[in-house]
Image (cartoon, rainbow, N blue to C red; front, side, top):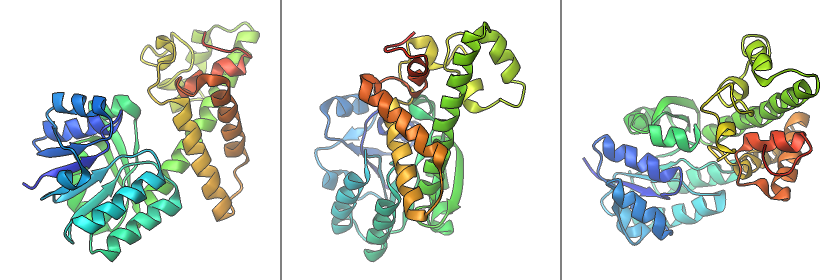
Length: 296
């Protein structure tokens, strides 16, 4: 079995690469951050000093990077050094244009490629329960499915090149909007004298039911595993939600789609980040809706 190269070993990439090791893969990893490399070594990943060293002899290269510019920069380096036929997979969440350009780069150099952003946050990355939304050729997807299954629970082929990114930004636009809606409902409920538990017990089994309520409830108590019970320590930071909402709005502009609630959600998360809370979990926006700063 040829090695898998993993470029980007941060909060998401590190645990994902560790799960590949647990599944029996030989993983060589590279990151610019010393702390990420140190943790990766503790998790059985063979760390190296350069991208070139990571990909030498690898049959699959996976990237998990912050933005489209980073992905394109690394992929331009990759296609110059890997042999044709090397599978390139990008699991970053990036803009549609960059995703298309990455696929085009790979195709020009004879490398099959998949865009495969994920949902599930750092908890899902560690537990190996991520959802992968994959774009690219169906046959290439089928051949790579076992690799995804080592890191995730749900693997969904969404269509051709960049379709994975399209699904991710649409999904997270829903998430951002719904979390604001749930937060507003709890703020109103507080003002009307409802306990958090009473509102949760009603809405969670009624037409207001949604993931933002039943899995990620933004108030302490009703869902013990939600970040609200840990002072909003992030499973998915507000700054990352803002990034994804901005991507959705850029895509909406390019496509001529009307997304007024998506635009409003992006504006509210921008304000929340501007107030200094981008590092809190995105569910902490309920505190801004209460007119508070900090957390409650």
